[in-house]
Image 1 (cartoon, one colour):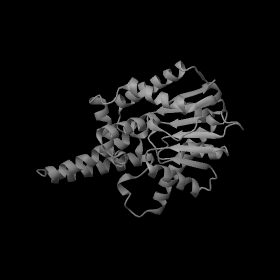
Image 2 (cartoon, one colour):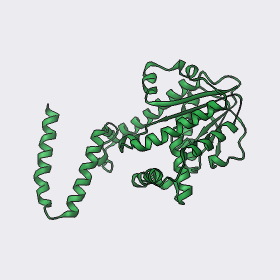
Image 3 (cartoon, one colour):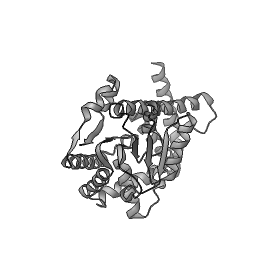
Image 4 (spheres, helix red, strand yellow):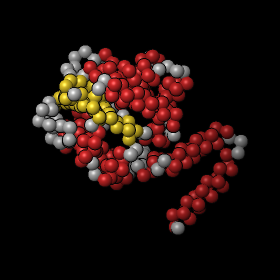
Length: 301
């Protein structure tokens, strides 16, 4: 009740002082922009992660709490991937490929938790993301053996066939890379700016730049070429924070359809569905989270 009264009092003060902006269109637009962002953060529960407007204020406890939340989130992802991959990794598993890992070592944390002793190959077009993963793992004392490939996924030349291929939320990343290739845009610019990312998703949808089936066929062909007898492929797709925050339903549906095309292609290539084996070690909490994800787990026989 006290929190509600404080909030109502503050909103009344904002209403009173906003009257001083009458006739000042620029100031009014700035205020409205701030309030819209506050409303968006409320709707999407983003205030559970950070106090956005105070990020430039010296406050050690708050900043530490925020960092710990991020690290805890990465650790939770690592636990999830460890549980998914544990039933699939045996003493015969020597090579694992992580496709488009991005800046956070989600799958790598899972492999570290499993004490994987083989070689983990990372493929990402952005060298800074590969460096970020290496730095994070070094910080926590990981002995995971990494081999980085700063390459275009669609034109891989030096990779051998793998025992296990893993991709977390990769369809978006591959789509955005294709968009950058066609539009001659630096891919890092999309991940550094919300506006640039929104523009990219809108143009992909509205301009018909990418044929979903053709794109899915290309992804599937590369995946199959990197597999060998008894190897596994594990892919996940879900609505990320960016999609949820900006309510990008059309984009999520577009990506989801490509993911289903990939799944269909892999089944047509006579890969066996092994999802029951992969989810056997999940906790009840992890199984609840799995409802929010689309997951492919298949084996080449």
